Length: 240
Image 1 (cartoon, helix red, strand yellow):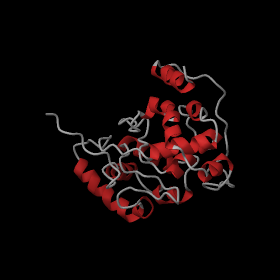
Image 2 (cartoon, rainbow, N blue to C red):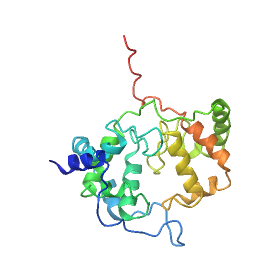
Image 3 (cartoon, helix red, strand yellow):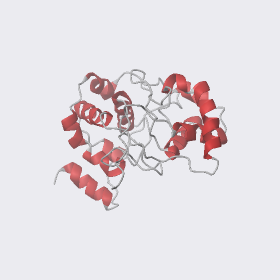
Image 4 (cartoon, helix red, strand yellow):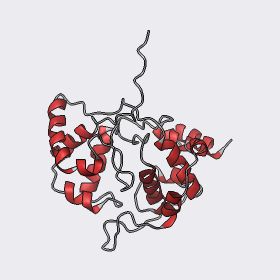
């Protein structure tokens, strides 16, 4: 049995992977923190051309949580990955492997990727997946009101980096947020605002630091409504 298949079987059975704890690297809480420092295996992976065929095989272990489609979970426990920029994927995986981003659930799986080439391969494969249009959205009775409030806030302070349609910016390592789950977006923005996302961009922290919980709900509701033209999966054919 291949290692990746074994890991999926263990995950499906609810068996935690035993191993050494993740390392701890100083992040935004330290005075010397530099966001997205150009160093380590991240730089090596960014310079390499990813092989999508090899990446598909490497992605098998990721699919246990993020699903084969890259859709993640609507409850926000696991983010939607499909269509994400390779730069963002490589950075986040490298940060988790280095202990700069705390993710004890993902760490045992992230370290199964053997080298920078495999980081590049799996990222190229994920980036090539179409973005599922059906994902977790804000479902409150006041959804229309929240989306409208969020749109105003988003266009005022978020659009410049994340784009009109949530397309992000590959060259600047700004993530695609179109198709992302509402609950995941809300959790990440709350953690960034409150200083718990240790690999956060200080510029983003400054933007959302003043936001109330209600404002973060509205922004997340709007972001979860965004769709990227040409990148979304085609609608499923209606049942005959």
